[in-house]
Structures are given as C-alpha cells and as structure tokens.
Image (cartoon, rainbow, N blue to C red; front, side, top):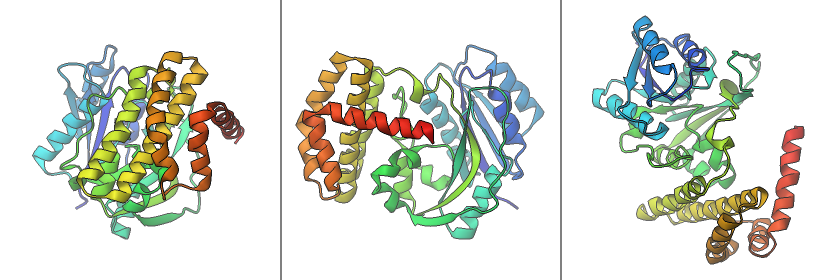
Length: 332
C-alpha cells in the first residue's frame, strides 16, 4: 500500500481561493493523503468552507486555532499532530491561495522512490490574482537531477528557491526536530527550510511545473516594506549563522554570513526606493560594521567583492543595477 502523505494548508482570510485549493488536493491521483486545513482565526467565511470540506472527504482534518498566531504557528500545529500520530511518511505544504496539478503528489513521490532522495522539488507556474483555476500544458520532456543538499546550502543564488516550503515533498522524519519560526511576520519558511535541507542527504529536482503560485497583492513578499519585516529577514540570516556555528560547519557559517550581507544590501535598496530614510540609516550602520567580512571571504567572486564595497560607498550604483535587472525580468 502507498505510504501516507500529509498536506499542510494554513488558512487565513482566503475565502476567495480556498475552494480552488482544496479541490486540487482532493483530486490528487495519489490517494493516500491527509489534508490538514488549519484555520488561523479567519474573519471571513473560510471556517465554514473548510468544515464542509471535512464533512465531505474523510481525508480532510480541520483545525481551528484558539487565536490568530500566523502561518508558522498554523503549520506547526499540524506538524505536532502528525508527529504525535506517527503514521505519516511524507509531508508537503500548500498555501491556501495556491493550487496544484492532479499529479503533484504522485509525481514527487515517484521521484523520491526512484532516486533514493529525501526531498523532491518541482517548479511552479505563476498565475494572476484570480479565483479562476488556470491550467497549462505539461512539458513532454522533463529534466531530473539528483543532488547533494549541501550543494544547495553552499549556493547563495539558490537560497530563496530552496527555502520556499511549497513545491516540495519531504520525508516526515526530516521535520522531527524542526519547527517553523512563529514570531516572524514574513520569511518564516526561508528561516526554517535550510535546517531540513541540512538534515537530508539528497534532493531530487525536476523542472516539471505542477504547482500554481498565485501572485496575490496581499502576499507577504508583495506587501509594503516595514521595519519589522526587514528586521525579520535579517534575523533569519543571523540565526542561520548561529545554527551552523553550533554544528561546527565553518563553510556553511560563511555562506550564511554572505546571505546576511546580501539581505542588508537588498533591504537598503528597497528603503532608498521607498524613501524610508530612518530605516535606511539604521541598515547602513549595520552594513558598515559587517561588509568587510564579505569582501574578504574566499567564497565570493571578484564581482561580489566589488558589490560589497559599492554598497558601503555608492549604493546608487547597486540601485541602478537592480533597476536594470528587474526590467529584464519583466521583459522575459
């Protein structure tokens, strides 16, 4: 018999999307699933919708949080119950405003079984903010790579991509000693997933797109910059350095520090763009104290070293490069 897969969905004020999300999950070709709908005290009709779904399909577990505590706490509630019951072999995460292809779980499960991996990772379609369920034709040919998870931990360019919770299937054992940060207003997945990658040995990566990421205007990544959000991003990088320091991993500590500097620079650019002078001055002071370490690191290129020095004295040049990069991405 196929092993059980737990799918965790934190729900908050997603009345516009939740039916679409759950429909895509109950329609999975992989049947042995348990869907955890954790309502974080939604103020719209999400609760009633989720309850109806749980009455309609016995694979759906509906949980109502006692108070609004954020997506991290909602996911941890499900993780704690999964660990307590100890009947789930694999875990996936889906956001309530997103949806997935019918073969989402089946395909990733096969990737793990055929390639002896602990994490399977597929790609996503980015769809507009609409309740309509859009679908795209699948690629006839797909590329699958089996790689050491450490290679990703040493790759700063891939930090955001592998840090996202969704789009992956994890062995449940990887989460036994890991929980998601609950006091983050944003970035809680990036602040957590590296620990799971560190616990694993191999990740199986496919370029097949089976996840539909909704580009909602209310999503955390698109909200206006705030000091709390910015400091959460920087804190996640600093906690990463502490995590790998405790485990005596000097290479990974150095990569975490480079990530910290890159995050400071990125937030400085945003502050300049938003004309937030107070927060910019604060970040500039932090950067001034830390940039030399990055400029001297053996793990950065000459181009990156130049970037760190420019960030100290000529932030306008970095802003110009950022503007050019974003224009190219929009054209593509």
